[in-house]
Length: 151
Image (tube, rainbow, N blue to C red):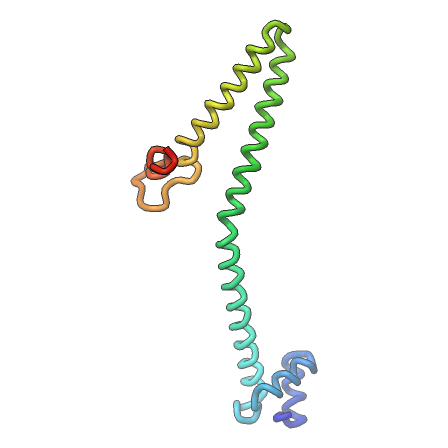
């Protein structure tokens, strides 16, 4: 151990742990650094640099998974909206005469189809917007007409 007993005691009092003091005394020459405070400070800085690297890795992983999570959220929300449409169709079917049930269910189905196509062509642009300078146009570059592979 490069530390003397007095230096080890000083480092141990600064960090509050004998195990950490042993690590610091094993990694740094306390006498050459100008005392226990400098050695503890150097160890703390090295620990913070490790935390910064871990945080950068975590931030990168979060950025990579955010697109997938956003897509999952949109799909789950769309499924819930379709279930609400189905529930509304059943509600309306229960409020009309039996001879009109097929027409009201067809109306609800057509309404759902038109809404889905409308969201695809226009709504996605309003929901996501354009990442570049758009001069206030929320859907510029994001509608179905702007994506030739999808039209």
